[in-house]
Image 1: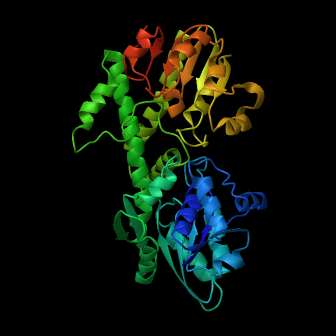
Image 2: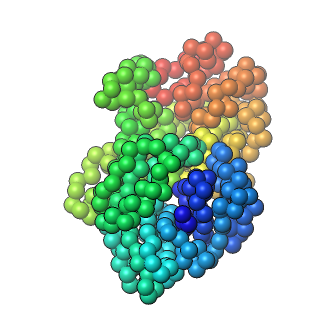
Length: 432
């Protein structure tokens, strides 16, 4: 098939590269010449394990075509995917400006004959109906189309694996022809097929992300109980997770959820609920606990650390990505800077993005050992494997005070005690 992805972020670029790997001809349509030029040279712009190699291979085989031109891409395509951002407005509502602009441009460049226009962007219920109206109003003569919703469920840091090993493929449309074409495109991908209406497909994505956010906030709520009682949250959740009705996956205590999806999607779902006169008290609590997780961590640091020269490991919102959108690290860094802390920061992928935010306010370390040199405490904010495998004995010799605040519970408290560290984690007894 010939397909076009409008948008080249985590969803658009990864999906485009995977479908090109299957032998399709895939146009990647962008709006910024500099970024399209970078894609043409095998620079994926974003950090995602394996993506550069996959992009490079597809470019060599001429299966990926980065472009700025709607005419050359959309007019040749059997399926056009909308995969642009839907950032939150100040009131939490999803900003659909770009989605609708893209839909209008697609309409004006549709080929004669049939095209599926499928939205992969996370959008509120009813958005695809508005896309359909825009297409009807602006389409070229003799163009036929059908609208579909085909949400993605990939995770940053494992996006290629998740796309190739999907749990489910969701296709929502009122058109059997569109459904058949999308199912054919997804044939090489495993997972249960969920064929449904547009509204259900739109809501599935929000529901999935809200559930994941809920599991994280629930784990942190139990961590609050454990810190007050001396219980060990990891043992509690391990035991609870053995119940097949519950499970342990994604029920991890820490600094809360961040990134480009969960925060904005929970906010958007709350806004959707308010517009529908649905009480969102449950989601309100999920967001409140997410904030408390970060605030409690900060409060412990402010109470404990007297020498304010500290190191931070991990800046991205999760490991294996350079994405710092809604990262807990940004919130924590801002709070510590306001309290006159001197911060030495390190991350193997996200330093560049953090520099854009904080500039010269931070000291940027070359490696984890450089970061902790002559500091009085270490804060771990992202669970990179690099930190799990570090030489802790060497770390201790470089620090003025061997104090660690582990926001991701990556170390065993008993091991840390045996090494002579004062060790604070989430929902587990402190060791000194």
